[in-house]
Length: 409
Image 1: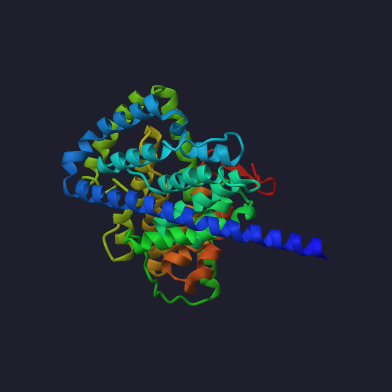
Image 2: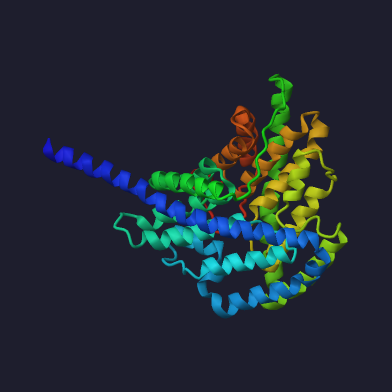
């Protein structure tokens, strides 16, 4: 009996300690997210005020990024792929230099008008710091546990959606499987990072939906079709990104030449299309989608293409916020076709295109609920589930593994 009590004590004591360790990790990652996020938003404001002073020089910024990674980056030049390699046990170390490299590279990308996101930075920041700290702690499977913990903290600190962040970190490494062993520290780290970033005033998008929709059979089938369309768009984005990176790498093998050539092309395209409307995160399209601004029928498609070209060229950032903008602006167009409230369909596109492109299910459902309101959770569940099923099993993360029961290829 005494032995059993000791075993229970050690089990619960270890779980409690894991949860507690997530708190300081969340604090540190949240603070870094705040610095990164606030500077990024300021740089974007400067570029938007003076587009002709920055967008024409995107190629020069790209050369600086590529040269620094080539000369000094080492393994950190792998970026998100390195995080996945460590998560799968193929690599053991994430160099701390990855943090300043990915932050500065993303700042330059956005200042000079590249179309990219920021979640990749936040996830890499969190994973790098937490994995480094976890290796110093006496826990079993500490490497994988604290990698997931840091990913959750990074995502939550930037987007202030801690439930979605926890689920995203747990399911993204292997599609169709969850890293339950990291649940408790990921949970505490995510909520801590989100609280810290919110308390320190990091701006984040949220919109309270008020649309009223009848729950009849015709609406249900409209949601099914919307899920199929959003799933195809997200899957197509992931496939096109992989294909474009492959072609760019084959035709322009030198990364410095590649980013210079494509950077010039991108500058011309960004200036040609409304002097930077499709530069940056795409938050302008998100705001217009939900606040009655003008959304053109081709906005989502141009953001789709220019984001892929930016990332294929080698510029830094991520894909998630552009995916939000693609989904929201595409949703505005579909709302008129399906005769549903614009804000609701934009919100469904916002969440489900992200889920489809990342090959995740639970994170996008709760992104929708946390950003737009839990009253609409059933709608997000239906559309995100169908999008997940129809995404062609593609992912923007090329090293994401597929659980055996979900491998349809």
